Length: 141
View 1 (tube, rainbow, N blue to C red):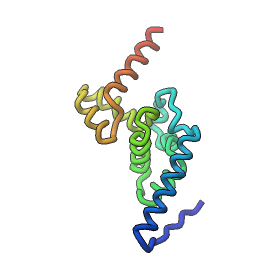
View 2: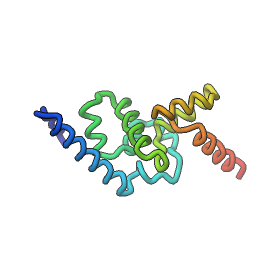
View 3: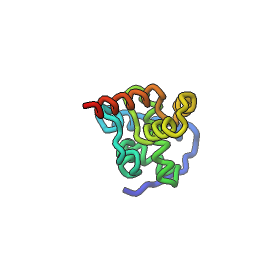
View 4: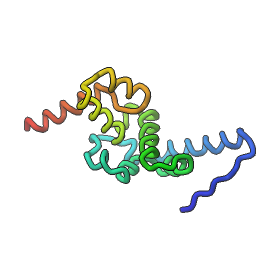
């Protein structure tokens, strides 16, 4: 699929196109795609592999990000931040999950993880603790 970039004549047309994009993304996300239905934590492969991480981003959002962001790593991060911001209670995206777990492991700072979460770059410290609790329960079995 080839992307065509048009030069818009007015701000009104640009905003109209962005509204259509948001509507498409919302429909795609709420139709049961991977980004919205999250019963399990992301796997190590989801966190480490960018192409697997891109599976979590709705197609229309990926298309939009390809137009404005060149780096695949940055597209992945921005897409995951967008999903997490739009659906904070129903989605745990791999990139933000990995950042939260790693910051907790390396620095052990509740404040740091919560600040990164507050600005959209990580999961919350409470979610990190829930994950640790699940791991401990699985190991105990």
